[in-house]
Image (tube, rainbow, N blue to C red; front, side):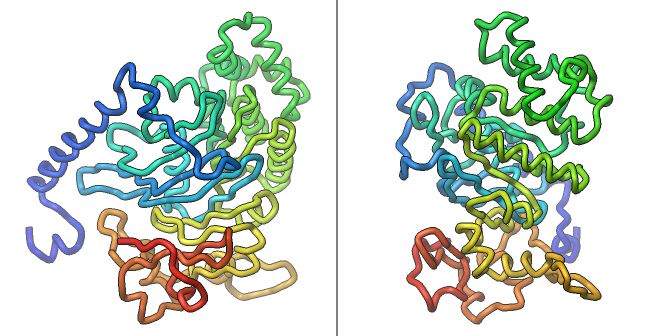
Length: 386
């Protein structure tokens, strides 16, 4: 194969086999660590940096080992989710939002997908656990009861061959083995009523294809909240819904969150939803956090060029334009990431310093942090990156 072809991103069959063999060795070692039995509690318990947080992501790295190279889907993500608050995670498709949440649930597709390093500290009923080190058998007891997830597309998340009621029953019965079948069914019907389904007894006996998109999403919310979890992960919960239903679902989610006093990790592309629902914002780009802060700080004083571009891309009420702004360029190849700022080649506000290493964190306030050399003149750098 010619050098030109290699430069274009293609690899030979021999090279692909070499990478595949190397990947099997790496993932095999990681799988052995994950599937250990009778792991001492001390190996995966830790302490929260701030007791007011329910979750703390600390330099999390989650990679996918493919036959053409290693995809660094999450490449050093750090942010907190305070108790009783909503944290919105935004960024374009492929930036690592969903993989971050799946890492927290230990649902990254294995063996190709693996948490390589970093910590995910979770304050649960059994104390503070490092999810990145927690054995699979322990994690099964946490999913659903203490951390639950509302998945992106309810039609693919609900099993089409089982009735709706049976699927919600399963979640409740799995974590409450002392409950009778009648008690489980009654709890399911109560949850269906709680999420605004009027004909709860009828819906209990229906299949997913018999329900509308909004009804299916309500069923997913009922399933997620059936055990009053401490943390709800909402992965673009309104993507497939029309605007009217979106508003109803978001209002429902907010009211139920207040009712059971839980926290929400809200993943979305819609900055309007973030402005309405979230207390804090985390902006991700190519597997890294580029800006984070309170909603007011990020919306009133966006400081990273990528955040500025996202906000400029929104349609504005009572303002007519021929064409909405779009961020120029394209996302870098996730297999061969540069050592400089990942956004540099698309940035319209770059500086000479941007030619150097990836920018460190600059703290604009106690809660507002930005990875951009444009902020270097205002504050002292906090954490350098390689």
